[in-house]
Length: 147
Image 1 (cartoon, helix red, strand yellow):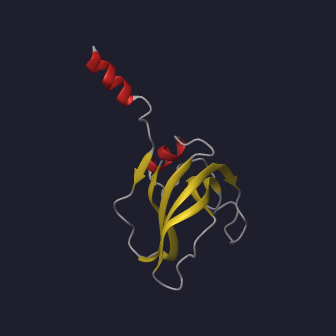
Image 2 (cartoon, rainbow, N blue to C red):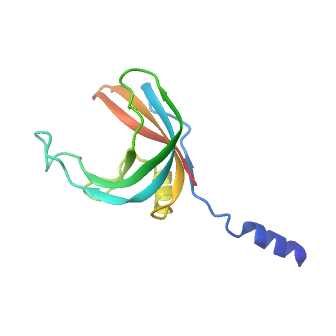
Image 3 (cartoon, rainbow, N blue to C red):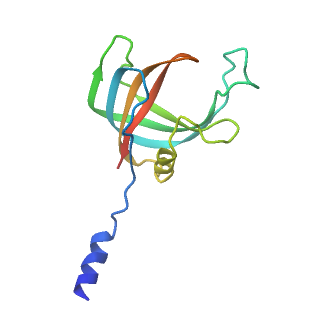
């Protein structure tokens, strides 16, 4: 009986959220950001009408998870084009049509879904410049998110 009580007590409050990406997309890493951040809320961002495809044929906007950066634990800029330290960071979870963002892994969406507004987390991301057949573009890839 005592053993069951110890197991029960050791499991109480052990629920934590955690995400780690092991494989990075191809490209040149411009900067690495390792921070302590506060999860604020989800934000529905409309298209900003910046291309000829907007708003009907673009994939701009969607639902974003917004974080406020409280402090940096590590920062490394590899080229002059790497992002400077940030005050906030947003991750697109859903496309404007309601489908999951294909660039955001399901495990990361689930981890963010388990967060409460105001919760402080460890948040790491890499600023990567991707070169593909479709074009060249920057991405900001979350590498780690945990309580």
